[in-house]
Image 1 (tube, rainbow, N blue to C red):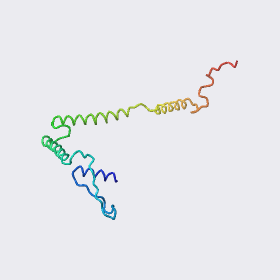
Image 2: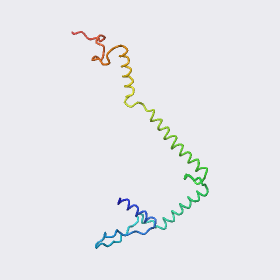
Image 3: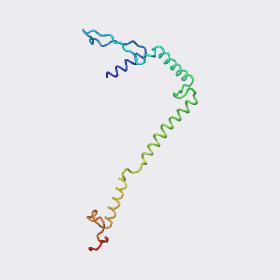
Image 4: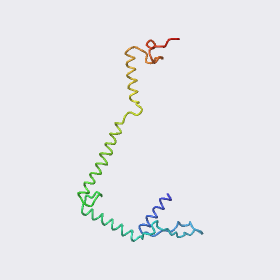
Length: 150
């Protein structure tokens, strides 16, 4: 919370409002001591900054008067409209739709779905043949060719 208060004070100083003193009762003897807070950008005068903000605000108002459907991309209405359309097309259509489609069609991670389907197929085969589902021998012992005992 203290950091938020400091940021608010700095913003007020940048806007040209006077700095406030410390809280009452914080100084010796319960008196409030005046605290001089310097703006972080001491090189820039408040009036100069206020003048720059007025110029920026004036250009924004001029763009809004020229184009009531101003989208913030350009002062020319045609370029502004097409830039807005392109930004939303690439931002929404391509990123969200194509990205979601790509994520949906990614291959099965670890082949878990394939292993499940294969196991279900083997279970159905063994049930049709009347064999037990699990057997202690992985291979059929009668089909194994073993080397001679020599």
